[in-house]
Image: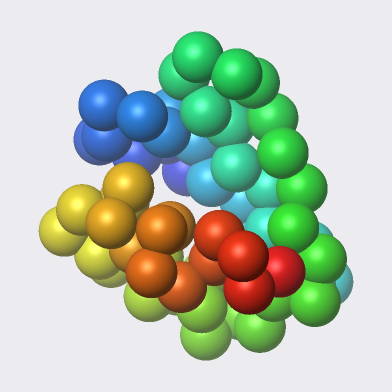
Length: 60
């Protein structure tokens, strides 16, 4: 369960295509059909919030 350094996101997990994101203010959300490559890039992104908005939100 990787905890991340982000003002908006506290934790990110991926399992069998489901990306789970724990937001600091609104709790856990699951996104389905997310490739593992997106998860890996998300973990590596300098800004987790920007990556989320550009590559996950409204895509999954």
